[in-house]
Image 1 (cartoon, one colour):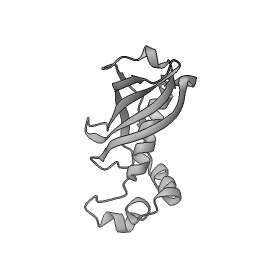
Image 2 (cartoon, one colour):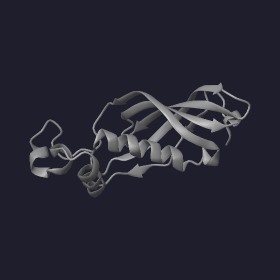
Image 3 (cartoon, rainbow, N blue to C red):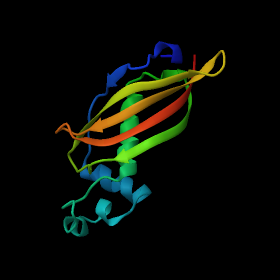
Image 4 (cartoon, rainbow, N blue to C red):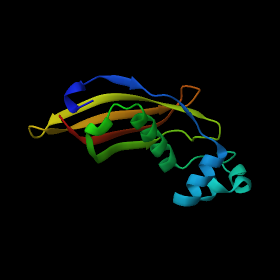
Length: 141
């Protein structure tokens, strides 16, 4: 879809993704090797009572689910900003995540391009919001 096909208030619900313990530990080893993501024994003694996903991992999964919906397609040029990023609840192994996406802003910049801002709200299988954030992309009109 090009920029002009989106309307303010349009909403989309993504497919779901089940996060595995292996996913969490592999991502954390590469990008966020803190004990609560990679050390089962130490994580068991925390307020979380076990391994949790890195917030950055949750953000990446959120964006993956949105992109896989195929709404951007080849019309997206590049991401330009992220705002109001919030990690609201921990993501545990075997959590099933999905995202509700809402178009919150659309700006025409030039005759052929503009910016689209979407609010991304990620939920687990218990309908608990685990992540919220806004992403803006430069797109073809």
